[in-house]
Image 1 (cartoon, rainbow, N blue to C red):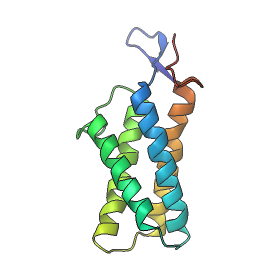
Image 2: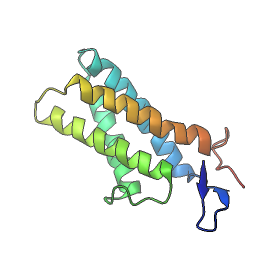
Image 3: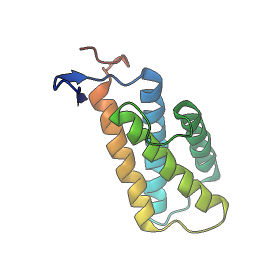
Image 4: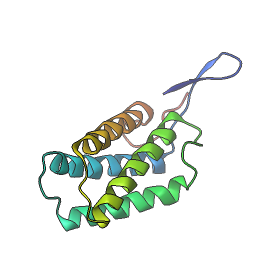
Length: 129
């Protein structure tokens, strides 16, 4: 991933490995849940529990201040966490999650995961300049 510094020079900004791991895990869980929910299939309680745990873990690492991150990957992760929290709230209150929200979960997950693919080397190490 590239960022333009104030002096106009492009620089590669590496994503922290812990954020990249959380993002990848949350992407996998949220995508699997969205595929089931988007087709009107029942999401097993164990999958909901895993999604809740992973979302909470990601929120602890990222913190409560959404959108104040230092990288596009961090901001994308914040958006994914927020939408996951929204669908979890719908689930815990017994309300149906509209198909549009399920599609948004899938889209945000793909968008956020693109930063993992672009910003982290295969061995899980951040890319270096």
